[in-house]
Image 1 (cartoon, rainbow, N blue to C red):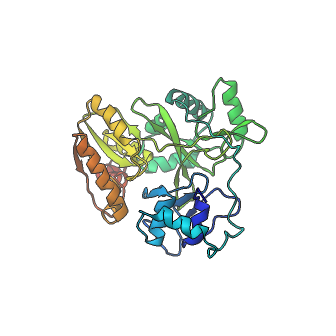
Image 2 (tube, one colour; image 1 turned 90 degrees about the vertical axis):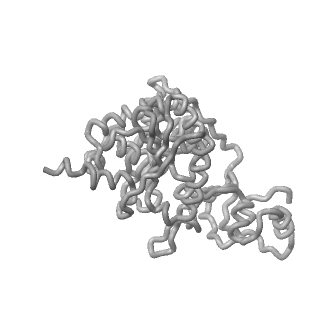
Image 3 (tube, rainbow, N blue to C red; image 1 turned 30 degrees about the vertical axis):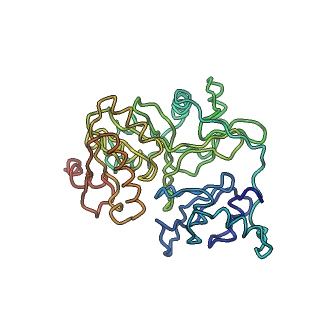
Length: 358
């Protein structure tokens, strides 16, 4: 055996087997999920790419990292150990419920340039509308009607995905490399089916839409997800882009979640930068470098208050502080009453909510 895959080590670990036919699936994250009656499953195990990632706390890695954690074995030397164990006759064969790897003829598209993504997403949003219940929900969280319209939130399409793609193509849009679009078995372009929810544009410092998140209705686990079409023919995955709400100013607030950033900006007028999570810092250093050139000198972090008790989130926060220090940025942390986990909820309730109750 020259190459070790995720499907090779799963039978050796205390993890559930993947559902039949699935190339990725979710299991409870040992760092941030709780084993209570409402079982959480945030840790994604990808059998195609041989990686794992928790979008909630950011814990991620490859085959050897996963094996090292669950087997309580030092990472150094794991490859040699697995080569020995998997090559021995004493190891049971993988049960039939573990799926075969997906067909090798599936080809994903590389991510399109920002200009193309912004053009396609803007055209798509112009074809959709915002349902009244979503409008009411946004107003109740502190956004004004003007801000809601300007941010271009939309209710997800629940049917006619192929027709939407067809209209975009007829309008001259190129859907290759746009997360959320793919070609079906007939070679026709389509938009990924998504449960009912709200589309949230994720914008760069120039206001261009880099990608989109969806906030699903009636979901307690993984309510916020990226619009993605990875592992589908000609599809494309999202990359965890950083979102900026408001114009660039000398001081920016760094928060978790694009919609939360939009709300805080609307309530305070401050420039708010949003990462997908405190451990999802892939694009942040590049964006901060660009913002420094535009005059940013101070970053105030304002992550949800549970970071005070979540060790894994604290670890990601330490990495963030190291990054800010290297970049010679002034930084600090906003703290507030922990009964309100998010800064948006706290500001709306205690600072500005009263102006709407007369």
